[in-house]
Length: 57
Image (tube, rainbow, N blue to C red; front, side, top):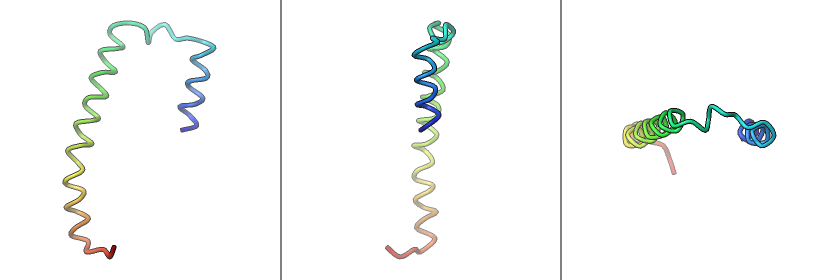
């Protein structure tokens, strides 16, 4: 959280030109989509793992 805040403040004062290209936008979109797919697919496996632990509520 602190690092994202620091990055945001840094980019406010020193804008990075490489972020404003089409290739960077396509790359970030692909990466965020891939992370979203992997995290959503792992949730059901993780819930099965937790069910096998027989934890109390």
